[in-house]
Structures are given as C-alpha cells and as structure tokens.
Image (cartoon, rainbow, N blue to C red; front, side, top):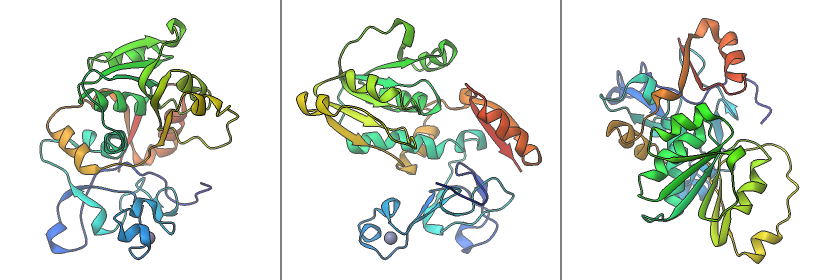
Length: 269
Ligand SMILES: [Zn+2]
C-alpha cells in the first residue's frame, strides 16, 4: 500500500485514555477506520468504506509502539482467560472466521485449505469447527505437523495427487497457489481467495466459466467470533508463535519475521 508510518495491526493493549468505561480494559481493536457517513459505513460495512484508514496500512499509525489510538467503536474487550499472546491473534483469526460469514459449510463437506502458513493454519482450524472434512495442503512438513494437531488431514505438496473438493481456500500468500487452487474445485464448487497478493496474475478464467465455480474474495472478519473461539479453547494459536522480542529490538524482530518459514514474531513494548 506504499504506507509510511508506524506499522503493525495485530495487537493487544490496555486502554489508558478515552471514555471512563473503557479505561483499564484489556482490548483488541478492529483495524479499519471508516468515515461513518458514507453508504458502506451506514450499512455497517465500514471495513469497505472508500475513505477508510487502516491501522498500520493506510493513513493511520499502527501497533509497533508503546501507545496507539483508534476509535472506541473498534474496540473489543479481551476475555480474562485469553492470554496476551493469544489475543494478538484475534485479527488474523477473525479473517479466518470471515469465510463462515460468506459461505455455509455442512458436516461432510470436503474442503481443501491451500497453504500451511499462519493464515492457512487458522483457516483450517476455524473451518474444522463446522464438522466439514478439512484437508490442508502445503510445502512444509513441520508446518503441516502443526496443523495436524488440530485433527486436520494434511498432504505435502510433493505427494499431491489431483482431486476435487467442494470448497478450496487459497491461503498460500503466493501467486502460484491460485492455479492449483482453481484446479482442485469441483464443478459448481467454491473457491475462496484469502491471500492478498500484490501484483497481477495471468490465469485463464475459462475453468471458472466451464465448471461454474463460485469465486469469493475474503478479507477482514468478525472479532467477536475470534475472541469467543479463543476463550472457549476451540482453536489453538500459541504454537504459531516463534519468538517474542522487545520493541527496542524491533528491527531485528522484523528481519526475523521476514525469514522464509518464520512463524509469528511478537513485539512487547
Ligand atoms: Zn465511510
């Protein structure tokens, strides 16, 4: 997004200033700040406000700091039994829950999650809650092992034998995933795109037309669902944490996070 400013949009913090009823509360916050006036905002779709700022991404400073500010309307109280380390996963976990606001999954539905990174892991865990049959496909044996702990079947990309699924979730974070994802959707099935990949794809759309495939873009999601799932221990996120750095070592932390295969790196001010 060509952003300049303080990055970071996954956080937990304590309210130090603001309305009395919020002071001292441990909170997480939704990252899209809508204008509150436009048609989308009026329809409760401020996440799609054309004039929005987005914390750490568009026109608003983010969370790699001792303090940050955001609209009260964006705050959610963190349940007491959810640790700080778990609470920072609320935003990406909510993004995984967004899928369930967009499609109906039934027990027995055959679902493929493409990608074994953080987002793929969270999507697999969330979709499993529906009783659907989830298979995760990825390149990394160690990351797939992590996903398997959540009773999700996994396949290493090298062992992949093409077959068709009712729903395919593309969460690889890479351009190459798209073609494989499309090839694994059954006729009249659904392809969900979770990766926000900058740049252009060259892909034939004929398959989508011929097989009458539903393609759904999916981004930010409901924080309340994510916090409920964390509180009820229905998902497990702390195994995704690789290391915690102090904010003072933030540059080193970002370098670590950029390493191929790195799991979540946290900063503690
Ligand atoms: Zn608006």
